[in-house]
Amino acid sequence: MPALASPIEDTRTDEEVRTIPARPWTTVVWNDPVNLMSYVTWVFRSYFGMARDKAERLMMQVHTQGRATVSHGSLEQMEADTQAMHGFGLWATVEPAGDAGGGGGGAGGTRRGEPR
Image 1 (cartoon, rainbow, N blue to C red):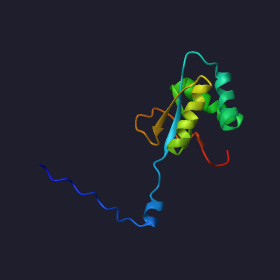
Image 2 (image 1 turned 90 degrees about the horizontal axis):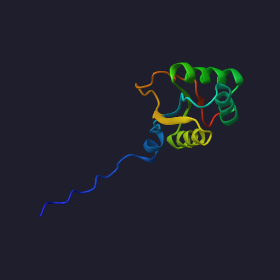
Image 3 (image 1 turned 60 degrees about the vertical axis):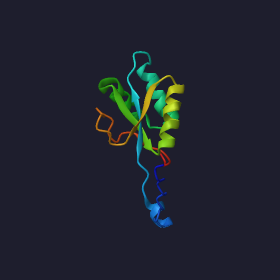
Image 4 (image 1 turned 120 degrees about the vertical axis):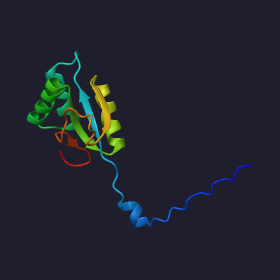
């Protein structure tokens, strides 16, 4: 019978555990053939509370580049934002921040949990 592995003891202090930064995530909205540009702008303004110029800039990025990062923060918040975008009929996904497969997005999104 093989020997069982013993559990590894976590020797980190509470302070060390608290200071490990959470991995940042993003919500990406994708272009689709259905929604009007004015509607996408309205969604960004109403859900994220974006100023009109920022919402229009991100909408144009979705339209011309095929995608735009619209928010960034914790995984849980980005999942909630993505579900909200689905509720509005938009195509959206959650991606790790700085994902090399980007193709647009940048830092144009809203940081969740802070004033907009």
